[in-house]
Length: 80
Image (cartoon, rainbow, N blue to C red):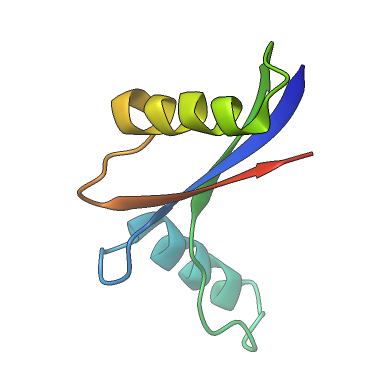
């Protein structure tokens, strides 16, 4: 079994309203030194697969079919 972490984030140039609103809230709370906030999603996925190459292929298919929108998202896969 492998444990994988899949991080989904917006591509460069795509508006990030969640990040922008979080930055505004931080500034309102007095954190003036905050200059930018980017949002991302992190999925922790356990797979019953011993071969990391096969596991990566399965995870990429998950990203392409459900977890990420390839038009606006990039993703990174890492293993524990």
